[in-house]
Image 1 (cartoon, rainbow, N blue to C red):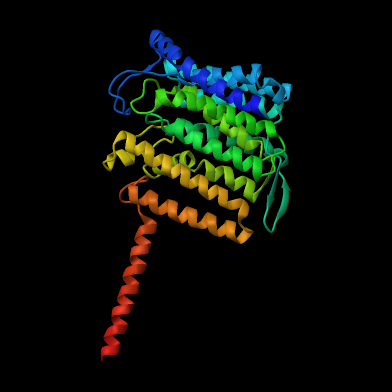
Image 2: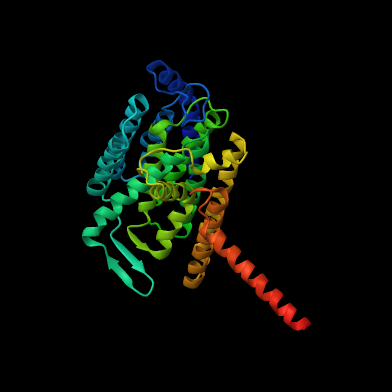
Length: 370
């Protein structure tokens, strides 16, 4: 046990030591984010920081934690990681089209599904029972990987935002998976904590004011790993095991879902970037760069705390918890105008109900006076 914790410490130090070197390489080869209308940085910023996380994570895995993992699984996962990292590095250098990035993630997902055997095979639903996904296993698994990877990629818009939110989500995933979801593969939790250590070593360089960005190298890699880790507990999914990772990753998933909805309502292509993501809206409301990041960290922590409640809830309790979370989330989204300032269906309904209640009460009081 002490050797495992020692390995995590080595990962953290390696990540902290490698990051300045990756920064110099990024500047030398031109892997930089230049200021433009879509970006918040005012000066050219070296990117590709995810390479330091990837190297620290895997160096420890192969040299210090090798005995903790099934060898075939480790090598196959590493192969898939390489595909993702290469996709991210190329994108940070020449900026790939969204479809080209998705192709890279799709190829990595194929390795994971067919070679490593990481997939969702059955789904147990209340009042329905266990459903064998059969041929649906492939599209469901691939879509899950693509969606989670892209969700993390989309929130990487401010210094330290994706890194910090991912640390919170991964830590919650490791704890819930190990203690509550009966994930038999303990090595998954070890791997998650090792990735957290790599992210922790990188965060001081990435937090506002950042010295280096994750880049798509980092955000795609982190998102891909989060998708794979969550799938390890979803092979035989139940309502609880399915909802918990969704809630844990509530921040990136929420931002992605409402971005798609926003673009659809405005008749714009889903892949077209805009400046109306969660972090953009909070900044437009007057929060500083750092305040916005800390607020979103707080939201991520709230999602994590909600996720911890599910294992202790009955089926009815889980349903009510999910409903309350969705209602609270919708109210928050409408208050900050994530879909649009003029789109507040739930708030407008609440106002109408409140005004109707007030009107009925006034009529009743007037009637009593007579």
